[in-house]
Length: 315
Image 1 (spheres, rainbow, N blue to C red):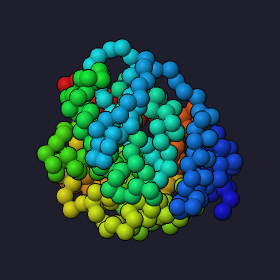
Image 2: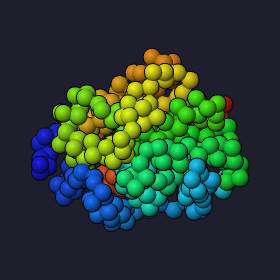
Image 3: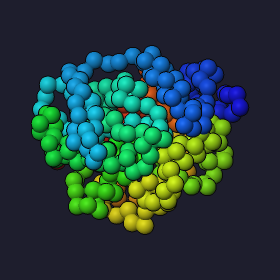
């Protein structure tokens, strides 16, 4: 279905103009995934990249070998608060490079040391490989933050889309396994429910960027036969969300997952978890990555980074 800006009257005009030439991502299959990844890499390569004090590629111990990460240090000041970041891409697409520009922006705007995690992707490495890698990396950072210039008492986890799913799953795992302790979780349009039937999945089924059909294909490739209601896969199906760190939830309105975001915020609040719910009714899935081309997206990223900076402030 072709994009018609009249269907999305709240969309910023600069973002609407871009969407005219941005095709909706096709469904992910074992045959299509390589081309989709290449398209994502090419598109990301066009983004401007802000200078940061230091960028370092390294590996951390993981459950099945070393996990590549990229560490963004925004300034020589130490110790810095830390964000362990999971990139989006439906657990199947994207990598350190596709989210390099966004991670640089977060590091600079939030004044936080960002550790971006290159977790294993489906369909080659389906659930639970991705969350296992992310949790291992986040656990290492929490225990060794000082070694990279970070403050071990101010470590957050976060991400966008699939990466936000991994971040909140890491919080569940940390609670269930007795650690580590994370200060907060930054969840930008997170994947939350593999079998959601909330209204957004129908009403925003053909929204730009990632439609419902493609999102379903990503969930299927990622779950790969596992119970889609496993709370470590679909956090909205957790029977107990108490004891999790405070959450910042970024919720675009033109997104198939819009009602999942709201439902998770409500569920966290009912469980006694502090939630900073940030609705952006005129935005699309993935909108924070358009900070360089769309002023409204840049302002939103400023707001999100300010919230993260406040959540990680010294007591």
